[in-house]
Length: 279
Image (cartoon, rainbow, N blue to C red; front, top):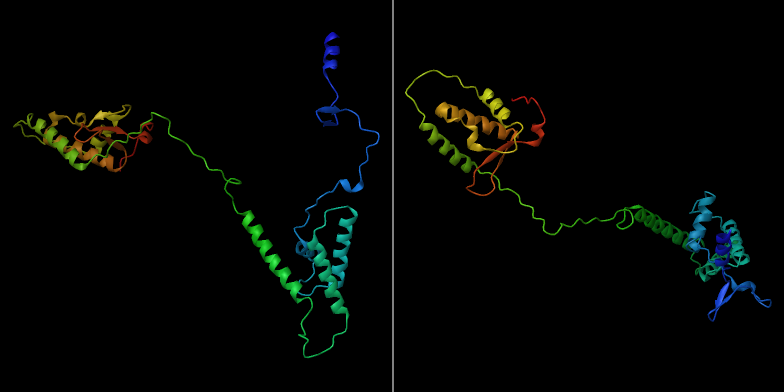
């Protein structure tokens, strides 16, 4: 109960105004607010041509054959309504009202044919202005409907964190593979024997053996794929199998720098598969 009393004492009434630093909690008895002190600005239309175009489209009228008397009456009703509501009435609305009244009077008066008379329609200038305004308004709406930067799309910039260095391994050149092959062939030559026997070596089978050997490993040295005990024929078949798998994007060759050892591994898309058909 004591807490409620204390919190109620802390709440204070908001002042109506602050006059010379002193809060004003009650309105003065002699305060008078004139009717013209408050003005409301209404931007329902962008100008008199916009209002005319609205009145014409609302009644599905032909812009080339405007019933000037009817449109003038509706336009004047809108102008009088703005005056009654004490809205800020721009001078261009009054100029358009005078122009409509002039066109209306020229159409009501009988025409006298003379040499100085141009014989044109009094509404021609107004129709031309309305057509131009309609074209520019439609063009503005089409431009506004286009995607706009900082309104519909916002650019995103991702900076590289400090101390981060992205190092891309150089591509393995074919000459580097041939140099590695030459070293393997030189070692295989040491195991050459004079025993002659027919040995069937299948390229498809060797490709499967290479893939099975690399499955589950990250990197394997290129020279470790060869069994020098098989001799020159086995080395050549293993090399051809490696080239075919690399060509099919099954294997990935990596060399950190020129003249460095070459490493090989299965690509990530082939690490998870249990069986890959070799064409």
